[in-house]
Image (tube, rainbow, N blue to C red; front, side, top):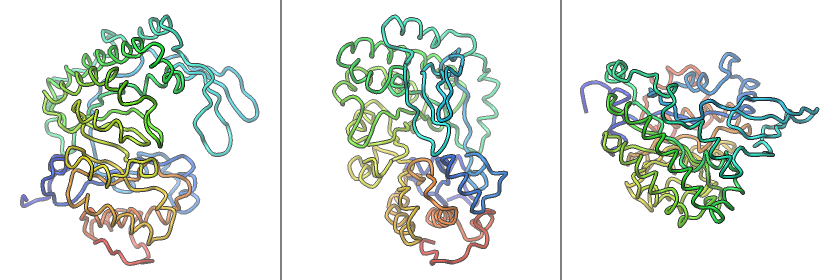
Length: 387
């Protein structure tokens, strides 16, 4: 180890390559709105009212992002179509028409109509995914290179969604039928997205040294994926591999995707195409990080995996969950976080206790923990047994 603490960037690079570090990395996934409201009632200062502000309040380690435009342009004009006492029906910027509950616990909207139902719809829709759109090429990456080169935070670049965004535009059930009825259209959409991603990523990667790439899918539930591994291999993997190859050609060998639910069927295909990271390792959804590491060894990097339901239990339950994950922390290639956004059934007191004990597990000193304002002067309700 050096005669000084590692920078955040050095620490990330070493941790993701299973090398020794001075301490682990402190990241989190954020909070549901109802959790933030509860935290305010139970002691969180009101000025910390969004995910970023709360995470900074809890001392989250920094990360820097390279700007790339991988989404729709232009988006759809948002408009309210109908409003009742209980719900509002509106067109979203991504094109879906959704009925959204106005009161009570926030839930997934009830989607009424999707922007892509036919090949004709796709032909019009893909104009919003034009790789040549000048709006997508406004950044002078050569001019930005020095800033990123001197960054002490790890550098992230987005690497897109290969089926998840199509699921949004087509609909979950409709996508499952489309895979059977018109697989050529599904593959054409995937291929077009990959063309866009390649066009966006290459200019940035040529100029900026990137430490990791992050995408998202959210195409799994607790029994598996919206489409099976056979179709995923045929329709998605050949095209996703093109993007993974580009990233790796430019030295980016930490590449993860955000996918809830049970990823076990798809993970071998992702590893095969060059993507090696899983987030958020949703335990109750079937993606326990301990089991993923046992199956795939160091071929898989893990982000998340702290079972959120355990945070609603006793202090002993929280401690037991962290101890369960301690061997992964020790081995490396793992950043423990709550395995989805923190829900409202977790008390602020429990969340603070979880944070304190997680930081102890990561190797933070008691003095470093005490520098984080919400963790100062916490009562020793149970021993800080991980330090």
